[in-house]
Image (cartoon, rainbow, N blue to C red; front, top):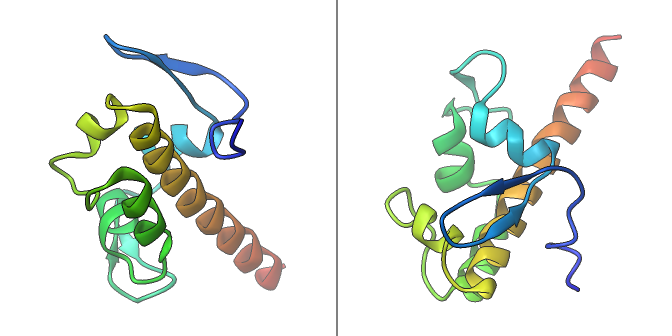
Amino acid sequence: MNECVALQGAKFSSTRKWHPMNVLLTRISVGTGTPYFTCWFCESRDDREHSIFFCRQFEIRESARAMVGDRIKVDNIADLLLGEEGQQRGVMCMLREIMRRKVEEEKRRKELRA
């Protein structure tokens, strides 16, 4: 099994399949903290949409695009998550990596302030 789909934790359901979830993906889906702030990586206004679809820091979108066979956009991400296994894996890997890097940066910044 690909490490990108070997996520631990709870699962959310759809009408088609069960998808693996973890704490990082849950943070994307429900959001935490201030809804808008300045992106740590590119100084743009930051929110979930910016992080997932637009921030220049996350080249993982290109790898995910290769797995999915299409550019991941606001208007197709739900269909891709409910699509074929390769599409699901590509989106989930991308989301997990984006959140992992954001959490790492948050920890790094907290350590600098301490």
